[in-house]
Length: 220
Image (cartoon, rainbow, N blue to C red; front, side, top):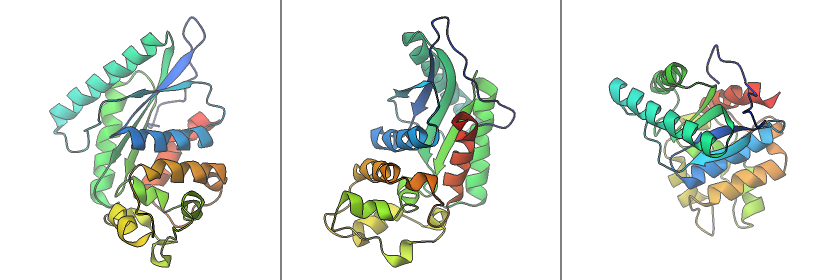
């Protein structure tokens, strides 16, 4: 959630509110939905999705403002269709780079753009390198999804935000059957069902930790 913004549980005249979730694709949105559902059990707002792909990270300043404006407009329209108040916007995008200066600058650009244009709090899931790096924070969840899967020891307990191409690492090294992007949802769901999200993560990832911090005001 952006600095200076407070969690809101604002309701429409009918007493309903929504948080709108946008992401690169359906799998990413579902992964983020699992995290929100587990980490914000008392949310009180319905989660709805914008199905258009998010393309914010590489946009020039003018283009970024335009794209955020369009996204916010769609979020408002989604809330109107639900006859509900818009109480939050969550946006996911893979960084395709490791945590560091580029990550920090890009994330701040997105946060600032939403602060300027969103009428509600926002949370930014800018996954470094990509969503698969977040999955590796819960290595126990993999075997719960496929009995033949074992996360290599070299990928456990490390800073996964510094791991390049984690998806390719899983393709090559996880085991049989071969990892597919759609498996990410099942892995994160298994992590949720095993209570792993409420325990200390295995390793670290600054982009995951920043997103969890954004969600904190909504978890109370």
